[in-house]
Image (cartoon, rainbow, N blue to C red; front, side):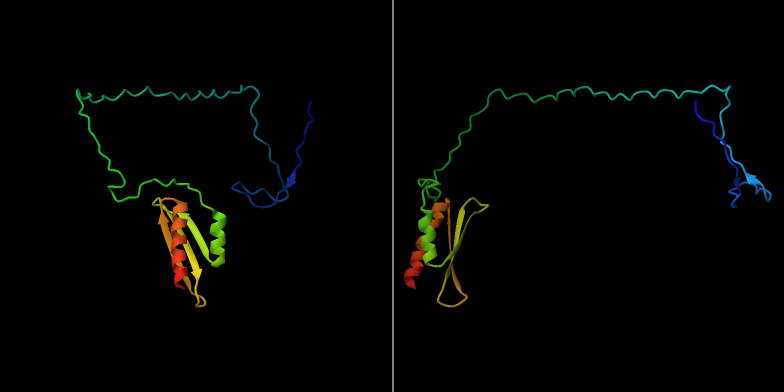
Length: 164
């Protein structure tokens, strides 16, 4: 059993909030509205569940009739030599002694970069110092493989170094 609670009167503090002002010296009594005991409590109707169905499968589209006889088309692909392209005789990952490459470029005090271009070839770029301070000589080589690009660049470097 819950203890009975009593409401204590509170003195009126001003502001009428739309209610008639009490006479001076009166107390402001507020009581909560209650439901009469003889009125039965009405239950809220239960909410109906939401059902989401699946739409039926779509009917297949009518396909075009297949041709009765289809001609065979022959396609001739020219070999790379006919198109002026070097044949792929050298393997793409042919062996290259990177230690020797680094040693050679280190002797020349060169900086270099190797990258695979979006067009599909490899580009090897090398910057070699010259006799003039602050000036470098740029050598580039492009090839289908990185090893071939490095070999081409080293050949160009040897040719340039021989002229110096």
